[in-house]
Image (cartoon, rainbow over all chains, first blue to last red; front, side):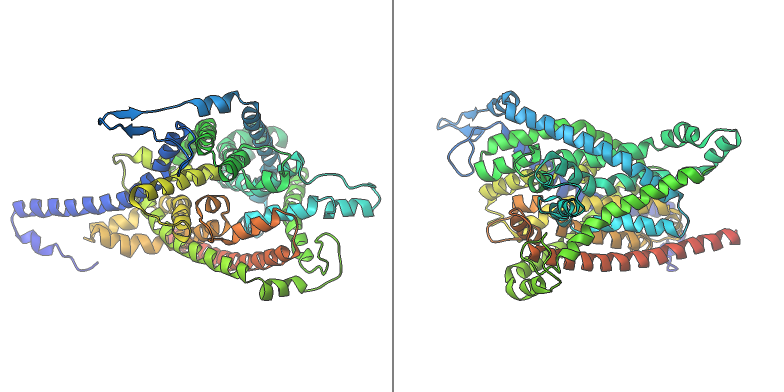
Length: 320
Length: 280
């Protein structure tokens, strides 16, 4: 850095400086372009473009071919372009009770799970923020640690707890509280437990990040002015943590709506959620046009929450 | 005055931690169960570890494939995610910034079934069109993983970039350092902690993914989650408990080491900051 490469320039005329500057600027602009273009093109190609293909297939018909759907655009022998679009898949999904009930059931389960996560995650996050300087990093670490271990294995752990011959039933029978095992695995209850268990860190972490930035002098001021702790909490702390509540809730709600593993492993065939229907539609029935339409409708349901999440995330990153 | 409420908070935190750790603890305990039926206790034994180590070659080839994918994925995702974060934080306005920002955040919350389905139909269409990818497996899974992992890396790096400010870069530029020199001599070294956590996050996300990999894989390419899932779908299996215990142990050790290193770094940063403030 001590090597000042532009020092000889000072001796040359004003014109040369202008030329060199524009050259440097151009080099810098190209360099910036490359930095932007590489990830941009990757995302366009592998993230955005695939959605258009799904949208395209959702407007096609099932065909016995490989891939198993009709072409939207066909060139006839005379060179005329033939565009064939069918909305049958969408009318089928929206009128068929199986699908509409499944969508509603998914939304119900994810909304309730989000509320449960918030109800328990909020005091946990607040408790961590309020703990001492030694405990705080340790508690935060303990909350994050399960998040790094396999998601699949955390769901599996609950299969062992909730099964008819599982740990909970064994315990309850051995202490004489019940005579027959309570059916918990392969019920909606198990799905709730699974979602709350695996998504809880996603609720706690944004709340923690938000609460840690809070100015505690506001609470002290409120206390000095005679406000009771509960009153201070509802009037000062809670309103200030709304961004954290929204971020955490969306991080739980959006992925939970499309969840596949948890309803499959803990709900068995008894709990219908749209992610599971979509996956099975695709792998077993190979009705791609209907599966694509199911995905498009799901995406449509989640567009607003995803946009809200992006808005908050964008603000967070430009925060200063 | 605060005593009552902080007791409530302490109870909630303790209950939360119990809720997090008891299921994992039971998973580990039952891996040492001699009985073939997981929930029926048949005495302590390391029987299932022997089955796992000596009679399950397919598990280890799945582990190898998953580690290979995770490694390549983490490396590419870190590079792409870092470039994306630099573009978002340091480049001001540019054409398509809103779209770019949107595409960078969406994978964080996008349901996996949608991402998986769309990438599969994309790969199949591409194969029809240009004959590539000829078969699905390592390459397609890795591309799919990079696509969603880079978003997580970008968030991590963006947070660090906004946090560390631009003063040093501006000073270097004023002293005549070219933009590329500024990037390699100032920005990248200062980003190292974020790059390491981003890499580890991408690595873990890849190792963890079942749904997207199930969509874009082909015959014969079984990652570890695909293998585990196909087995536990049929019920509890003691050898999976043993495998889970090993995975939990390895992850816990790695995360603890990483956390300790970062904690020490964080404390050093705080100390530097205090010294700098005192010097002012």
